[in-house]
Length: 113
Length: 110
Image (cartoon, each protein chain N blue to C red):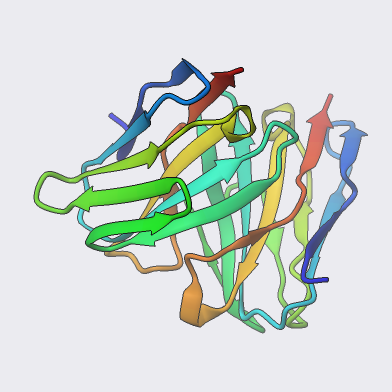
């Protein structure tokens, strides 16, 4: 089954404790992206990757890092989480030929206290 | 002012009604996208438009490039259409960067 998986689905952590949210897709997609969703602000793009070792900033990259060492994986790293990073995070992937047809992961709800 | 504005923010209708959700944008775009977010949180891409009109089942999306406006219509609405509908644009910065509207929460009552 074609899918994008994210782990963990729910996470409560404390300020400053490094964490990684994993994202994996099984569709051989070149394009992957991370979004955060906040009430009143909607979805905002954090980082995206056009292919292995090619990443670029979205609209809200501060406080986040990403890496794309393998085509299927695109982890989101919070080196020193802060309460303003409490949010619902989505990973998505698509082929570069059809970037609009993005497949979204189920979301990760992160709470930073 | 947000680059992408949707209206209404909330919409409640009765089953069978014709639904219209609007999206206006203020930047030059290469494409406009409509997405659906289910009550459980899952997000699905519905359409991508760069001109004209597209139809998929009971969903119809139109775009007017000159007026910087798009509409999503749902015909013969059903309670299972209840979801948040999100408009997004890809602009001159490239097709890989999306800017989203805040979403329209649609509730269809039986």
